[in-house]
Image (cartoon, rainbow, N blue to C red; front, top):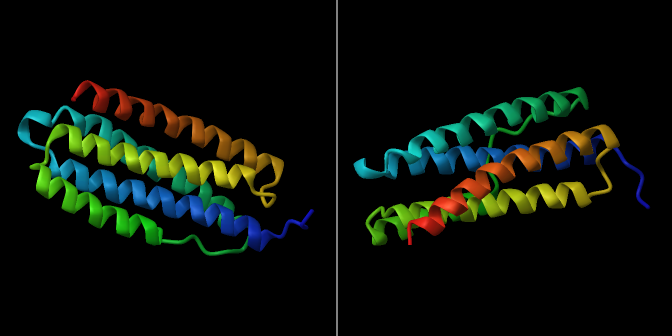
Length: 153
């Protein structure tokens, strides 16, 4: 088993910060793309943005406690995903279903990032508890987005 270092722990936290930056960017774009008749979704999307901002603060404080810098960027795959989302939404006419499907795709990516972090050997127990709580919190939004997507078919 590999010895845990603060740099490796901060690396795991940084990945989670970046995925939350992806969520913020993705939901901000989704809010802008909503048609007037779909504005009811903005409440959920704004909740997700606020949720990720709060999570980033917690993760950033832990990263800085490890004497590392808090990342400000997004994941590389997040940038590619947002470009794909923009293209897909453009061709589908900003439909409710396509926006929700794109948001669910992003939520799936966040869940995978959190699973990967929890599988890592680089999180001490107290951080693993924080990460698990955040994952469960994010799962609630994922499930809401998925239910709305399924209902919009």
